[in-house]
Length: 391
Image (cartoon, rainbow, N blue to C red; front, side):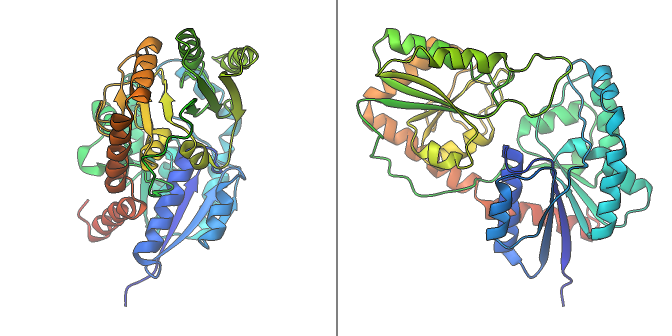
């Protein structure tokens, strides 16, 4: 008889970000594959909307605030580490909690939890540790040190996209202990490609943190250009400001600019800040275009995945075409250019047949690449390899 494997998933959020929602879909996929084989338990750093999803799929989810995370930054690493000193005790607190649960497999849903992974290894943890890496690490001495530490802290590393994997390779992480699994979608509902929301007004949305990296304030320039062209629009910014303080950045500048632009809205040229919403999928379905104006040019985030999964058009900065195939199932624009984005929107809005074809291509791609069961199957393959000693 096959032994039940107890998997502890550690989530540094509570459903407010893409990583937390991706984890829930992994767990849902594991249940679809074989819930008699895998028993999942989740620790969330903060309460949030993800708890309701776990209740629906009957997975225990505990709130455990004591989680310490750090990853290397392009700069300010010394300051970043010094600011962490008062919270180092959280490493031991989480370690004790893990010991109480006694899992066979630990899934660290964020690479910043490597300190707990290393402590577990040093103190003789006999199970397997799988770690998710979700952002591109920079190339510097701190990243190389962190990569060396990470390799000693985990049995396998999952990168969410090829550029993330490449960054780890450049910093010295072993290719034999790493694979790429794309984040699964929260929903793959069959869209109605022939129905735009409103032929008179184009609905444009942004989903993500309202901070300096994701660039939501760039949609202000887009709004000004579209209004000058007398193209009717309703632009909505969905997302909250960063929940953590920063020693190096003045937070709130982007939000202030967005709120000021909202005050200038006119009847057929609406621009508004909506804040965080627990049901972004509903808002994506209500959109005609989703724009990802990221300053880090990373076109593989949660907004990309969910937009494509609902058969909507995503426009994103960057060049990586592992998800978005330019002009086929969405649009890659390289560096941000508001005029270029305005051209894409106005042209595709006028060409209904082309618009619908891009939407359908997006959905067809997502149906293959972002299905929760597919992601979970790849996760299970890693577990099997680790158990059999193939890694």
